[in-house]
Amino acid sequence: MEFSELIKTATVESVLLSCAGQPAVKGTLCITSHHLLLSSCPGGEGQPSAVELWLLIRNVDAVEKRVQNVGWYQPPRSGGSPRDDRLAGSSGTITLRCKDLKVLQLEIPGMEECLNIASSIEALSSVDSVMMMYPFFHRPQSLRLEEGWPRLPMEQHFQQIATQTTQWRLSDVNQDFAVCATYPPAVIVPAAVSEETLRRAARFRQGGRFPVLSYYHTRNGTAMLRSGQPLTGPNRKRCPEDEMLLGSVLDEGERGFIIDTRSAQTAKQARMTGGGTEPKSSYPQWKRLHRPLERGRPLQESFIKLVEACNDASLGMDRWLGRLESCRWLSHVKAALSTACLAAQCLDREESCVLVHGAEGTDTTLLVTALAQVILDPGCRTLKGFQELLEREWIQAGHPFHLRCARSAYSHARLKQEAPLFLLFLDCVWQLSRQFPFSLEFSEGLLLTLFDNAYASDYGTFLCNNEKERCLCKVKESTHSLWAWLDQPEERKKYLNPLYSPNPLVIWPSVEPQSIQLWQGLFFRWIRSSQYLDEAWAEIWQLVEGSNTAVKESTENRLSRSLSDPAARLENER
Image (cartoon, rainbow, N blue to C red; front, side, top):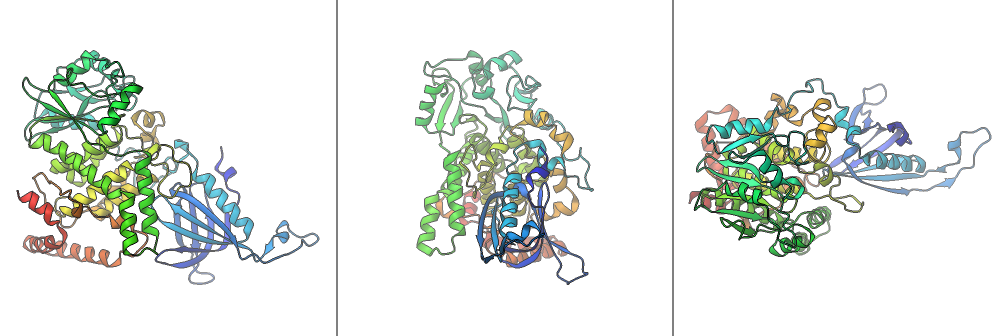
């Protein structure tokens, strides 16, 4: 397939671009294989053009077109061009609803041009072949292809654990992806368990996702594992190797907790289709806790309803609060934080090991394990540590980004496997940053950038659904890493929190309804101006950079009273 076959009209003059909160701009619209560009000439004839729009077409979620201002029919002249017979005075409006929630409007002179532009954008934004996407063509001059891609990330993580304990080992049983298609080549497993035991246990877990180490809590030596659901089925099948694997994690007399992210009823129904749960008789040292978290269609529909409510300027207070409640997005945020806190509490306060799983183990499971680590581990709250966490617990762990982030909140297409699990995770991290404004080294800007790049990116970091697919597509050899771009000094500073002060403690968030707030920086990002907030943060940066440590601490203490959540602060003081 050639991109040129999808572009019906490449250039149109005198196009008017409108975007909420910005003045309208007229200029020349161009369509390339991956971008939509609009350049204007503000200084008049002879002056250099200014690029007013540079939009990655992959970012377009929905295209809406409307033909208007129809004039009169102009008959063709003899020997005239084919364009003589168009409707004189006709024009059209194209509304582009983007995956990053931005809404753009293009007023295009000429009905034919309008329809051709809309058709071209729809076709280009629907290209689903990974290797035809822009990251395979993007070549920034300041980066080399090999930069930023983690070299053996699981091996590096294991080296940190190996300095603390000998109870775990690095296994390459999945080196060729034959045991589990969605696991990375190397995984961390109990040292006492053989490779053959792992292979047999994998056949007893959905998708071959046998229990592997997610996090080792150095303070007391407890461990958090993750897996897919056991395939017990209606006949309550058993797997001695799986029982041995989980038994090897606990010493005699110890107990562990299995946090199932499905309801007890859903888990019971899963037995009828071959899934199920760990029966108490086969896993006597493990206690099962059900904490249902939505995923799939219910979560995607909640996201869609929230964005619709945020964009409805006609709502009064009562209707706005009603719409906010009915979409249930904040309830999903609360449930995710509560479950992550439960996992963290089992590890830190109960001093017990934890196994987390739902059904496949690639969605809500990763949401819980990643959030729990942000709560527990100060290292995961640094910029570098947070990047490593995302690489380990979302990308390497097999979250299907290509499927889940295929569409955002505006798409008119029928829902397939889209679900904003990663956005829910970022929202929960934002809640932590709001309640503990000095404990995270990175700012809200990083979370927004991660959201944007998960749905449409210049970089290959979030491409594909798992490590096996990335190897087949040669993503690391052919695309640039987002981490390499963010780690450049001039870029890195944009994402740092000027108020950061390393906090070695566990940060226990408040999950009371009054403490969970709407992430306005994301959901209202393109609706209302952030000018004054941006100016305030710029002033804070000046204070921090131009002052000594004492002044910085004074600034932190003064701002903490207005930024910190009282309930969260009280919980931390306990």
